[in-house]
Length: 110
Image (tube, rainbow, N blue to C red; front, side, top):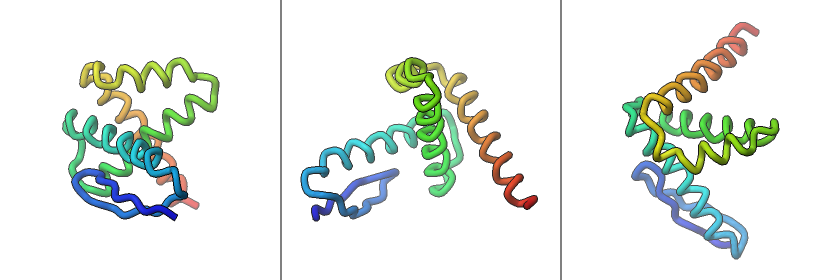
């Protein structure tokens, strides 16, 4: 089993993976880092846990879109993420965060 050191938001993590999967793991870490950088660029919260949660929600949102037949829209979003105006990023983050808060509230009501 291989071990890879990845960096996310300035922190180093040693992660194990199958031999030969090191580059794939590094690319996944780069995707997360890119989302965190995007969140920071639009003035998102700077708390470590919140940044990671928002990055995870953005990735989950893209996965949801892909799984529900919106592959073209998700691919376009990913391809043009850096070129989008900050307002579009903020709006998407607000939608994703609002949905996450709804889910959390529903769980607390159980």
